[in-house]
Image (cartoon, rainbow, N blue to C red; front, side):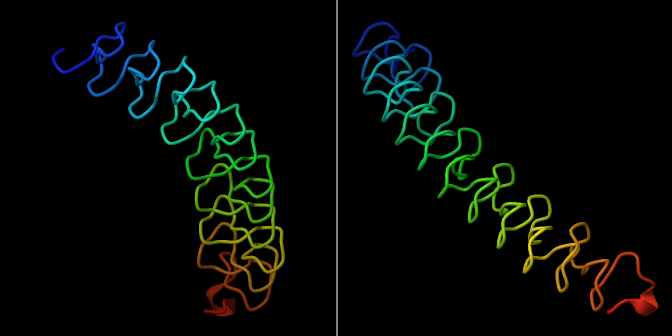
Length: 168
């Protein structure tokens, strides 16, 4: 391909991917992932080397090395959910840690921690913690019906109460 370097000859562009460097030569970009460097050579954006980007997730750093966007290391992004931090480390957006985002639902806070949003119903707070929009707490919204208040507490709107008993 004109304008592409050869996949085996350094200094030449890859024969398969425009604007990408060779998959086997150092300082060349990988033939499969745009903006990612070689998957095997140090100093390149790479799945195994520190300071390298992961070969599968553009914008995410290596899945195994500290300092990289990563599912296991603190200060790293999750390998599966861009924009979400590590699922296991404090200070990261996480399904188990307070002030962390849920690992499965972007922009939703954790289902178990106070001041976090429910992982299933956007805009509703946690189903178990006081002060959150919740099916069991007063002045909290129902976990299943957005816009309806708790089905068990007085003064709340409810999917099961007769219209005349609803606080409409």
